[in-house]
Amino acid sequence: MIFSGKDPGMMNQKQQMLTEPIKRFLIQLVAKSGPKPERLPNELDLCERFSVCRPTVHKAVEELIEIGYLQHLPGRRGIFSNPEYVQMAPFSIGILGDNANCSYFGYPNSRILGAFLSHLGDLKANTTFLTLNRKPELAAVELLNSGLDAVFWNIPDPSYFPIIGKLIEQKIAVTAIGSYFNFLMPKPETNFLGSDYFYQGQCRAEFFLRRKCSNLVYCGNPGPICDGFKAKLKEHKIVFSDSRLINDSEPMSKLVRILKSQRVDGLVCDGNKNQHNRVLRTLLDYHPAFPILLSYGLDLEQLKKDYPALPLFSIMPKIDLKQLEQIGISAANHIREMLLFKRNYRFENEFVKQHFKIDQ
Image (cartoon, rainbow, N blue to C red):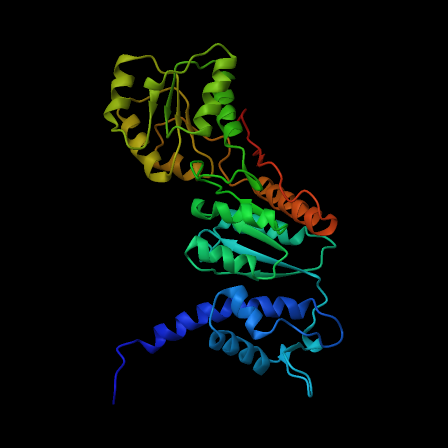
């Protein structure tokens, strides 16, 4: 027996990565073909389009013939669509996640996707969950050759932002959805829908302003939420010094120094649960009477049980489902306009406000 030293499983996986984009493209052509068999691009055309060798194209074609999507006709050269596989939906939408190789959707963005799909209205479209090549330059070729009419991209990795621009140039409808929790996540220049983090910061400040608090501490990272917080305070002639900003990487000794040496009548605790616990454990030693405003989305009641001595508040203790739905609806409206009316393929980024309860 002669061993080549190559893993057959790895070889098959690599071959599949090359054939899948070709098959996906041909299936889209079949789905949009007419009631009679239509000639499709020949193998040489497909080789050039996908930059692969002829055996790879031939394998993809033969697999689709075996399934039934494609067929040969007696006395005619080339490959033809099988009308039995023509679909009633004239449009095809690809669903992408993260680095184009991830089909995972967290709970908040799953709600956005659900609203998006349910509000496409009279737009008859097939949807396909895609996984593409991890290399952005190869993923771009694969996506542009996929035969898709639209792309819904969940939290795209920044290295793939140029692909969004290329899709727009090719008049392929695209919407990019932002992270619900990570306000530091970069955004593409256009066609982005996400949370209005600046407004969130303004609402945090408004919470304290209504309680006549002005000597505040902000435990969280710089960014749009903190910017909105400071901007709202400035409107009311209150200057927030960055010396009272304690980011996630700074030791709690900075907070201790502030509590010992300066007047404090309110504190914002932003970030994840670990950051909250770090701050709240430190505050326990000082028995504060001032309000402590927690980040949105955390379990306020549980934290009150864990820290009964602290005056804890939240302007949004639960995930805002209405806001998530609005993001999905807006994405659907943009896709519908692009596909049905062939216009506005590029739109300005949109930031949807959450529904906070500032007076509680």
